[in-house]
Amino acid sequence: MSSRTSSIEFTFTHEVTVRAVVDGLASGGWSLKEPLGLSYVVNDDDLYDWQSTSLDCADEVLMLLDAPENRGFHVGVCIYHRKAETGGQLLFFPGRTLCSFYPTINRRSLPEAPAFTDLSWYLQALVTPFLPIGLHSYETCDIGF
Image 1 (cartoon, one colour):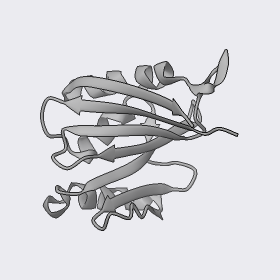
Image 2 (image 1 turned 60 degrees about the vertical axis):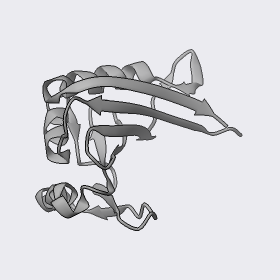
Image 3 (image 1 turned 90 degrees about the vertical axis):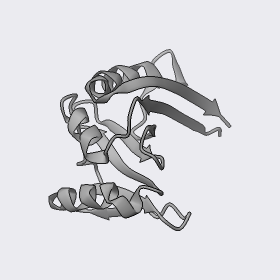
Image 4 (image 1 turned 180 degrees about the vertical axis):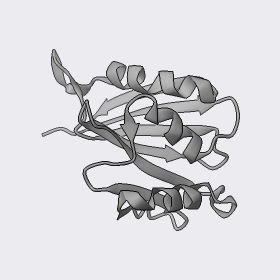
């Protein structure tokens, strides 16, 4: 059985905050509420130890991810589109002008080629909310192993 890794890398014209990105995504139907609750990571030890908490802690989590002391680390949140029943990990790089999306929750596949990720669906759902916050470019990748 083969596996697949898919991602979309987004580049912004200026430094963004996790909160600004999450707020922008809300206009497109995305939420921090995913099947496990609210999942996030501050990669301050190179272990990518994802944590889960309840949605009522969202403000505290966003403050933690955007804290000045965490600007030099990768940080991330899971996002979920309730209507489409899909989502994934949104990982922010140090400097916060680059973030990557990995469709890890109920990955959408192409109807005619189910082994491949429907990256066009994710692009349509993510690009429009990112435009007002300074989206500059994106790059996609879908690799089978």
